[in-house]
Each structure stands twice: as structure tokens, then as C-alpha cells.
Image 1 (cartoon, helix red, strand yellow):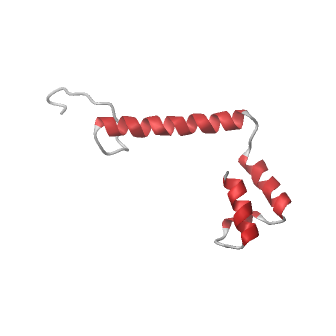
Image 2: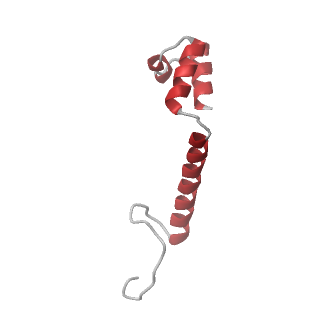
Image 3: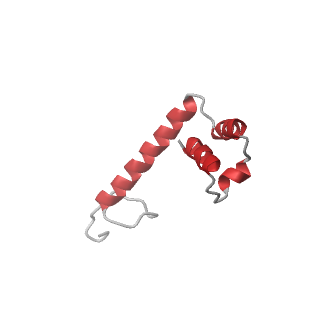
Length: 81
């Protein structure tokens, strides 16, 4: 492609055709913008986790383990939301 002087938009870390690479980069930028909007509203992941711990009376360690108790599942769902 270089000898033919064909230039394609891409990122050497992403394998694939130019259209695929553009789609992946677009989705990444959308996710980054969403996180930025959330943080600009004052939503902090650590503060949110601490609040969920307080409401449900659980520790972050309990939330991060593979426990399937109903209370833990509900707390984890809230935290992920």
C-alpha cells in the first residue's frame, strides 16, 4: 500500500480495514466523552462505591468477589449502574 501511495486512516494498535478502525476509534471517543460528562456532573466512582458500601453495609472487597447473595448482587448492580 505504501508503494502505491494509498493512505488509510488507522491506528497501528488496531488490526483491520480502515472502516473498522474508524468505527472502533469512534466508539472509543464516544465512551470517553460519556465518562467526561459523568465526571463533570460530579459523579466520582470512588465516592459512589463508598456510598453503596454505606447503604448496603458491605465492603468493597465483598462487592468485588464472586458472591451471589441477593444483597451483594443488588449492591453490585447499583454500583455498576
